[in-house]
Amino acid sequence: MSSEIATMLENLDTVYRLYHQNILESIDEYIYKEERYENHFSVALIYSKKSLTSHVKELEKMIRKTDKLTFITDNVIFIVFDAIQVNNCVKAAENLYKTLKSVEYHQDYFIATAFSEEFRENYLIMINHLFHRLHYSVEHNCESNINDQDYLI
Image (tube, rainbow, N blue to C red; front, side):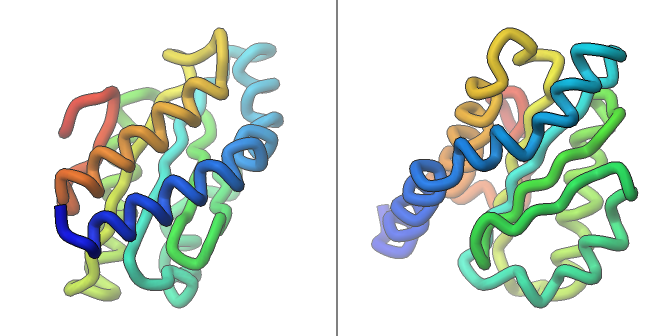
């Protein structure tokens, strides 16, 4: 494993340790809507070696008003897609990837997603899987793939 990938994995592990509880708290309103109204949601985590803050306007154009985009760090973004089905989650993540690549083509972007209905018993497990999937993508240099449901699409 190259030192660059090892550094990226270490950074990602640090983000998980420091922010996984904040991420879980940020989806409280979506959990409520799912439990009360069967209104499923999906989450996506985007990681880049470089800062993503300059891409805020482009990303905000790609999400709906009911979705939520949160910068965890300069190079990690967490997105909640409200009222979405599992197959549309991957499509939404692919659209974000295309937008990022159109803005900065030579930059690598790693994306993982998770669908809420699969984790209704414990949403912390959903966040754990999300980070695990992203970790796998970085470790195996799966830059051009969306990692979903523990296999690559």
